[in-house]
Length: 108
Image (cartoon, rainbow, N blue to C red; front, top):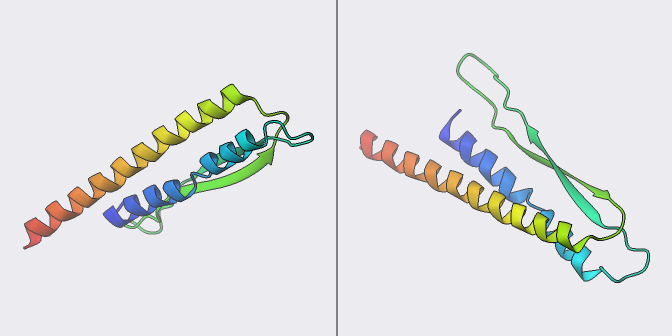
């Protein structure tokens, strides 16, 4: 996979991090009668080989489902998972940038 493919996958994951917004909605509406908690499910989009040397970049697909009552402990767990996922994807982008810079220095 190319450096741009790696960065594309990481940016896709950052954009798909809708878990924070859904969690915020759930916490704000905790005491609203009839409100159903929203749960964000993510699915990895698998990389496809388009030729002997080329791969399409992967990514992340999101789906939002309505669940039952809001569970505050579950919402805080979601926030911690989202924070970890965000920091990991930022590290992927930073590493890809370092690789790109190193490649440009070699070429120069």
